[in-house]
Length: 361
Image (cartoon, rainbow, N blue to C red; front, side, top):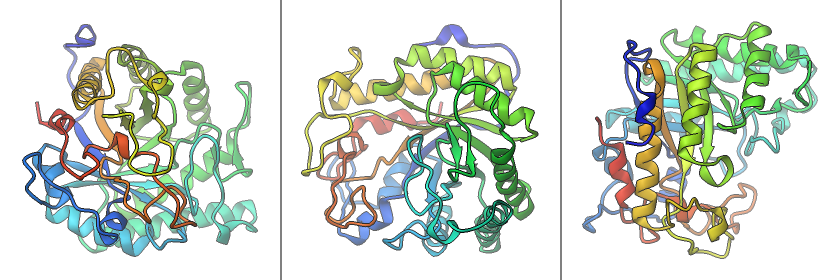
């Protein structure tokens, strides 16, 4: 298989391989009428379909005060109970924002906008501790917690921002990260903490960032990256980067986000992020078979990280159909979705062949 040459006889550094899916948009989609079906057309709960194909971990996005009422504590607790009843592990993803946090924006929650830096650190701790304690109290503690989302230039700008590739001061960012990490471990010592950058193949950025936070005293359990082929090159290139990260930081590496289109068509008026042929890799056409081949190869790459340090793969938003009202902009219910052609269900909600890549091996 692809990247098999990277296999190692060293003992594994992880006890289980995460086969994950970020289903943060699912409750809203269901509330707005989205329906899901097995490959044979039988209607079924989307989470049961994911589970029955081998998905074992659900990633849940946390916003501080989302305008649409989703992604906050009560919704997370409800979805966590539902997930645990079906046997899933939980990966809680703290954005520390009221909306999307990513390399292009790390906007403070409105309620935190006027806080001093010390108050901001305290707010990060309290927000993180409150949710993690609530999860533990209802019997669904987080198995994994991600502190920040795609924090290439830090988080909670401008206070926690780091820029450039030189001798930046990681001190403020480190304090914010440590506040979140400490809260997670206080609420439930068994929760493993991931840090997450929005790249997997920019080796200079990855080393600058993780070297910086490590030198500033930050301790984490899992090194997380995003891997989107239309941004970050081929799975073979991913293999090289993951091997380097695992060796340099001596921690498991986890692909926290990945996705690939099964078509270039769109089901709504919103342009798709991967909506034209220039966004494809030649080896993987935008077809159900091409999507399945891509995801199989990503799994093979991560499983082949030397020393057994490939922690797993999380597919980003496999259930995000083009359901009216469930678009990108959480301020505007009329907004569309630019992701439906990278879901793992077709435009009619029927399971696609790529789901078979999650089967345990």
